[in-house]
Amino acid sequence: MDIGEIAKGKDKIIVTVKEFKGKQYIDIRTYFENEEGEWIPTKKGISLTPDHLDEMITFLQEAKKKVAGKEE
Image (cartoon, rainbow, N blue to C red; front, side):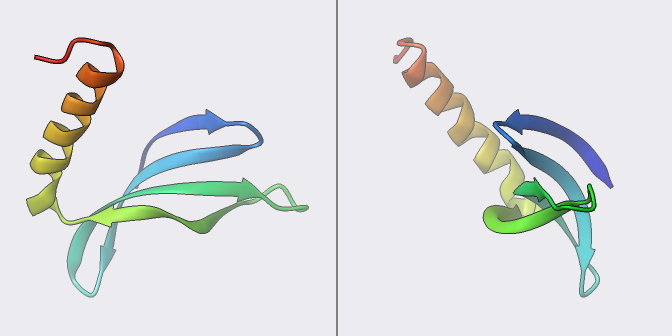
């Protein structure tokens, strides 16, 4: 199930929820468009279990603060 996408030059970063071997994963992956116009996933990305999602969100929020110069 596609959740959203971010343009990255000619490529896209696509966030999806997938199931593999009976477990759900959040997949954040770079995709490229092939000659037929299909979006194909690359090896560049990460898959997280729902158990790790809150921790990753916390890390991303901290990174955002540091980039924005709002380090506490």
